[in-house]
Length: 396
Image 1 (cartoon, rainbow, N blue to C red):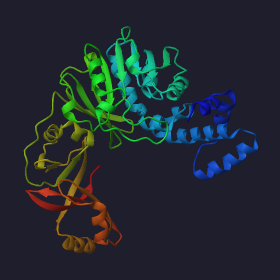
Image 2: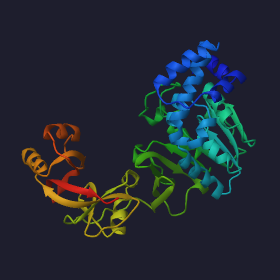
Image 3: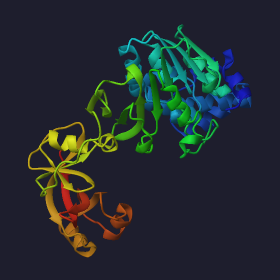
Image 4: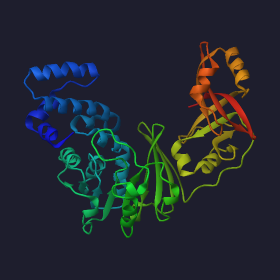
């Protein structure tokens, strides 16, 4: 979206037209609506802008729920925006710490600022991109205590703020398709700038979950967050926003439920032991936070093998921090014998999971030439140092 398209979209005609459109369902809908809107006399630029927004609003429901119907987006802004349930927990930290004025640096389309403002905290939201800042201004208009400015994060005077939230741009510039930046020095602003801000301030920094752990300052609380099984971010928290005694945290959000595993530091792995009746695959946030050992001990489990993130136990335990499986059988790892064993069981649909073995599940599934009516899950891993194929069934 360029500046001229945004001006058309933000006009009275543009906003009324956008709100009048039926829900977006498919590209076939777009073709029909383009024809209808052009016949009604709307300009090509406005038609393109409102239809793009209709499509983005539909996509945004996964992150913002019903709020998406009254928001504006860019494709890149939506891609990088914090999911509302996660933003609400960011905001809760500022509220719990008693902070009253927060600067949201690199606010994007305004997701985090929206959640913080909803708690009656005054927010200054800034973004270096003019179009993105304008869209954030529209999205945050219902909150009188919120100001949006088109400005670089590095140029904001923070002396009057008691809290800062920073979401550095980790993708190349633009409003459409962008690519991920792998060098923290190329973030905008850079990771070095973020850590300088942390000196003497209460700061939260949103980063990708795969950031090199060696870069995490010892003064930070590092929290990895997963939503419905997908690890979506790592947050670093400083000052009063960091919880006493918590250096590592794994927050697991599934639907309306949220559970957290915390520790002062990385946990030592549990002892390894024999394969039990049950196997547990830790949530990705637990793995990233290196809290697998604490999880294993909490469910009376042991590590299946050194360096492999599978926990085994003789007892079934319900836990939000792992997916559990009951071990049904141990099958041959050899491909020819494995193929025969699956055929004898009439398995035609097979989910293949692997850890600690060099196997491409998609390629293996194709070579197995599966047929039959049954479905199953196969875990390929190492047990007692040997490559092993385990036929399992989910228990949650």
